[in-house]
Image (tube, rainbow, N blue to C red; front, side, top):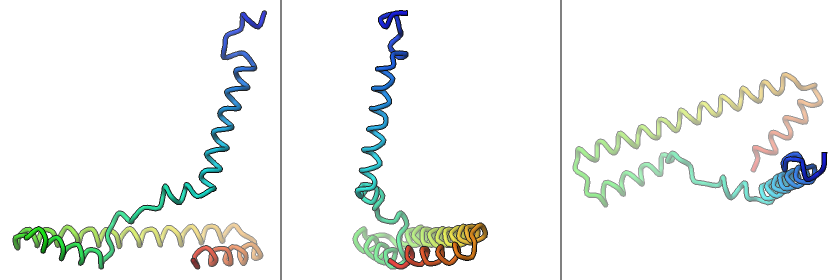
Length: 126
């Protein structure tokens, strides 16, 4: 079979070029993420307000929107729901982390556990 008779996708040169393009894209993506793009992409404000933010938001909305007493009560209830939801999520995340930490410790040797605990405290310290 002549090279001209081969289908394009079976040509080794085309396959090599596709592999090169794919690997180049993967390398550029990995380097971009390592260079800090990951932090920029994932550095966003929390979705749920903190307790102090809720009070500020409630007071400001109540004042600036000139809410009726009924609207004000409904707004307070909505913001309180968000705070409760956030606390529940934080408790779940804490539990999940503790469970994961415990499970990791179970597979490590005593020397590895000591090193893991040291690494964990370094990560949690910032």
